[in-house]
Length: 231
Image (cartoon, rainbow, N blue to C red; front, side, top):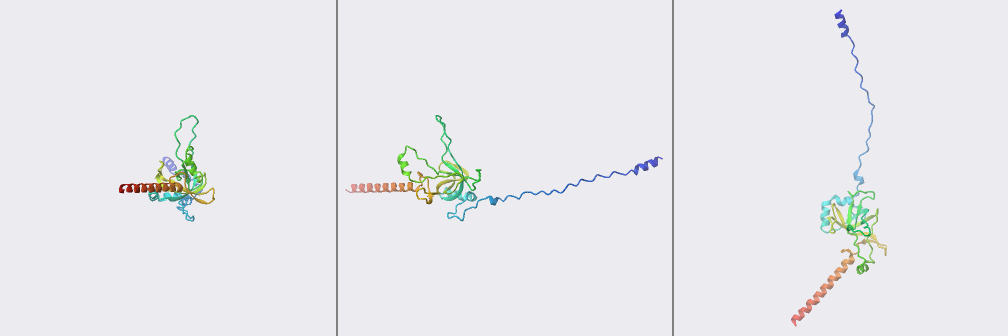
């Protein structure tokens, strides 16, 4: 009887392991990787007469181009005005620190709002005090440099890391020399430099005339002294 019972226990069937649940095939479709080259501006706008650089293009060879700018070489850049610095208003009766010097930012795209790829442009405006009537009169007929938010401009300047007016930027900034604008009197498009700047053609001509006058006066004085010694 005991053997029979043991045999019966040995012959007890084992339970089958549960089958693994099969998950449905799910096809995951990831978006295509962005093509960053498509978002970049060209190095230069080759189809334009001046072949201006884009900001991306000027910074692509940043070391070489900075060396040229620091050596005084001018370059031409095209970009959209992203931001124009406006000094804060000082409440009447309060003593406020002076605002920064005039500057603005340009970008390769009108939709680019960040400063990472934008470039600062400095030295584009030199205010003349109201009390300096002689200087005011000297420049009253010269067109001003006027830029507007969102508009695209072709600008000539010097690509530098440190400007002569105290601005600095690791990725380089542009010291303004002139831009392509419309002469309000003639309607023609030409390079317009900031009035009252040291490099404006009118300033250069006046300086050259003063130097020529001084040299002529010195020559006359030297000739008079020579005659006096000889006499």
